[in-house]
Length: 281
Ligand code: PMP
Image 1: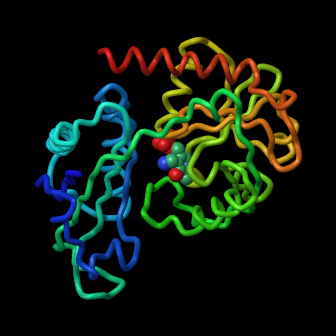
Image 2: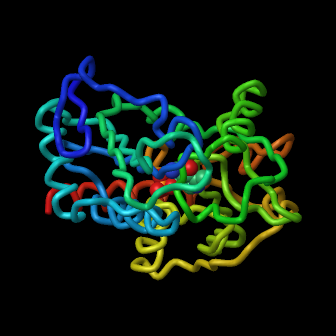
């Protein structure tokens, strides 16, 4: 495997990570996961823009332009012959003797490498289950930070319970999943949490909302409660790797007789069409 390290493409075996890298010691960095369809990075600009925004929000500069980064990432995809799969990239603040505060002059470190294709057709067709958990994360969930401790603790609970995702609840309000955004459908109305500091503004979420808007389907960007979630007609999640994933059961509550609902299926096909269109243009 070839890996992009700052601006160089290296063999995996040649990549060295310093143990004083602040990403390793503090989780001091930001990241992205991008889907590759037919060799084309989907919603590439949106992911790169979000990366630069996350970096800016933590006071970290990236020493090359978004255009240069995109060029380097395309060379990485070429070097690995990626047709279907993903791209993981992270930027840490860099290496320095361990102190909490940092010298603004240290050089950030980018690592990017291809992720294998994840087949999600069966769960997308049949739906998945989820559990709920209190959202005890910090209040800058809008930053795609490497600090994922509470997300992984909560996701592990889902894994142990045989569920696909844990839906996080902050003061009775459904915020998002541990690695996804959560949507409900009630009486034809699509609803999801507004983009603010309590959620990551998912690229798939934004893409789907554009599609919903284009079709003039009804939607609301409004907080909704756990009770509204459990009384919904349909529930689904969105993320880069899951795309649009129907949730057929949350805790003990089953939706739409345990099969993906009609609105979710409509959104799945509209999303698929949008992907096909984007990768051809
Ligand atoms: N929320 C969280 C906490 C996530 O980790 C992710 C996945 N990165 C998402 C939402 C979905 O974002 P996206 O659609 O950009 O993958």
